[in-house]
Image (cartoon, rainbow, N blue to C red; front, side):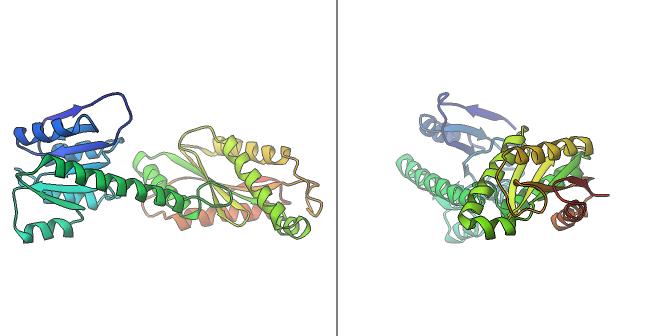
Length: 310
């Protein structure tokens, strides 16, 4: 079915998708919204799902219920079953006025239900409320994925990213590499210089790793304690080894004094590498266990070195 994108200006605005099979309703809603939001419209459930599959997704969906082929309830079900769209607020806009209809809509995950005929000021007010709630929720979610000390992604964010990249590797039949880094003899560092200095050291190491990553899809996160994990999508063994050695060298060049290290007079890291073409049965834990074994071998081989998993 037809998809008609409408843009109010080049200004960055919230994006709203209006889904309705009646041209008059689309004209009224889109006309009221276009001065405040970026508006896209779809005249069928199928067209709506196609828009929702695109990388740039709407921040909110106004969804009619009674449409041919695929009704609004089914569109909402599919949105809420997909991790990429389940957090997009859905407001049903429908001529179905029974309490049971509204209750069913809320049970499916809608945040609001507006009955036709609707009043534009009321629609705008409700959209404004739910967009504000959406933005606050997104901010809290972002904070929940950031390590407070180093200001890089935390373990939860790493697990989420790794799960996505495993699925991408399976889908595209492309290689994925994981690095796991450990600061050598960091307990000795904390014992000698104090935990305050240890925190400063962790932040410096995290920043150094970030500066070594150039591609938009590469990600470093704090795995725990003094361990860091780097996820390198579409990266083969040769590329991963080069990145790992670059990181090891950059951290060494920070020249952070470490009088109690048994490896060097300054901070160093040991790095394990695992490169794999993921299979559907691979899990985050399996991949992390494999790269952890490579890190163990790097430590066993004298530390301050890079070792790849066999």
